[in-house]
Image 1 (cartoon, rainbow, N blue to C red):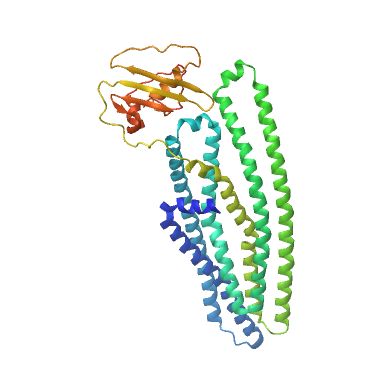
Image 2 (image 1 turned 180 degrees about the vertical axis):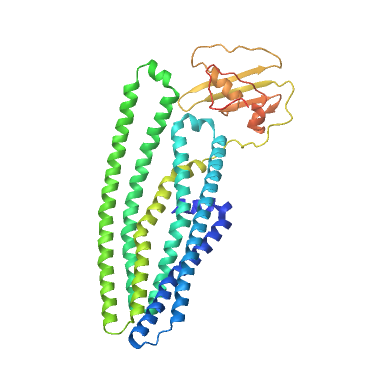
Amino acid sequence: MNNIFKIIKLSKPQHKLIAVACVLITVQAILQQAMPVTLKYVVDELTQQISTGTGDYQRLTLLFGLILAINIILIFLGSLSQRLGDYISSRLGRYLTEMYYQKIFSLPQRYFDSEISGKIVNQLNRGIISIREFVGSATNFIAPALLQAIFGILVLSYFDLGIGLLALAVFPIYIAISSYSTRRWGKLQFEKNIHEDSTRGRIQEVISNIKLVKTYNTQNQEWQYVSQKYNTINSIYDRQSTEYHILNFIRGFGLEIAFVFILFMIFQRTFFGQLTLGEMILIIQILNQLRWPLFGMSYILEQVQQAEADSKAFFEVLDLPSTEVFQIKPATKLLKQPEVEFDHVSFAYEEAPVLSDLSLKFDKQETIALVGHSGAGKTTLINLILKLYEPTSGEIKLSGKSYRTVDHAWVRAHIALVFQDNELFSSTIR
C-alpha cells in the first residue's frame, strides 16, 4: 500500500476538489438509503388501506413526490460527482506528467545510458494511466460503494439487528477471498509489466533505428524477440486470468448462498409477523443495494492492486537522486569570451577508464581539432565539457569557475554543439 499512500500524497493539489467530491458522494449514499425507507412507508400506507380502508391518500401522494425528488437529486449529484472525478483525474494526469518529465530532465546521463528509452516512456504512460484511473475510480465508484455499504448495514441493523449482523458478516469473508485474489493478480501483473516494458522499449528503439536494422538484415531477429516476449506475457496472463476466474466463482457462489439464506430469514420473519410487509420490502431493497459494493469489492481491490503494481516503476523513477536542477528561466549573465580548462581530469565509465590525468585548456577564440581512433575519448571529452558526466577525479573550469560550483544549464548556455547525426523532432521551428 506504500504506492497508494504516495498517490494520495501526490494528489495534494486536488485535495480540496476531492473533499468536495467526498461530500457529494456522502450525500448520495444517504439519499440512496432514503429511497427504500420512503418506499417502506408507501407499502405500509397501501397495506393499511387494503386491510382497514384507513390509508391516507394525501400522505401517499407526498411520499411518491418525495421518491421522485430523491431520484432527480441522485441523478444530478451522480452526474456532478462523476464530472468532478473526471476533472480531478485529468488535472492529476497533467500534474504527474509534468512532475515525471521534470524528473527525467534532472537525472544523470548515466541513467539513460543503462535504460531502454522506450521502457522509460512505457513506465510513464502506464504509471500515469493507472494513477488517473485509480483516482477516477475512487471518486466515481470506490468511495460511493464503501459509503453505501456502511449506511446500508446501519439501516438494516436499525430495522432488524440479526439480519444486519448477518449481512455485515458476509463482507470480511468476501473481502478476504478478494484480497487473496488481487494479491496473486498483483504479483503476476508486476512480472508481466517487466516483460512489457522491455518489449515495448525494444520496439521503440527498432523504429528509431530502422535504417540500421534494415542495413544489417536483423528484422527477423527483432521480430522473433518481440514474439517470444509476448508469448511469455501471454503465459503469465493465462495464469493470472485462470486464478482470477476460479476465485471469482468461489466469491460469487458463496455470496449467492449467503443472500439466499438471509432472504429465507426475511420471509420467515415476515410470515410469523416479526416484520411488516413494508419492512420486508425495505430490507430486500437494501440487500439488493449491498450487492453492488459486494460484487464491486473485487473490482475495488483490483484497482488498488493495479495502481500499486503499475505505479511502482513510476515512483521508482521519482525516487532516483537528481543531479541537475530543472531550469524554468534561461541562464543569464553569460561570459563573453569563455575558456575551458581540464585540470588533471580522469574519467571512467562503469566498464573501463577512458581519460587519465588529462590537463588541457581551450583558450578563447581558439580552434582545436580532437583527433583519435574510435574509443580514444573524443566524445567523452565533449560530454564532460557539456557537464553530462562528472569527472572521476580532477577538475574542469569555465573561465576559472569550477564546474562543481556552477549550474548545468549555465555551462551549456555557453556551448553550441553540432552533432554528426541529425535528430529530427516532430515539430516546427516556430
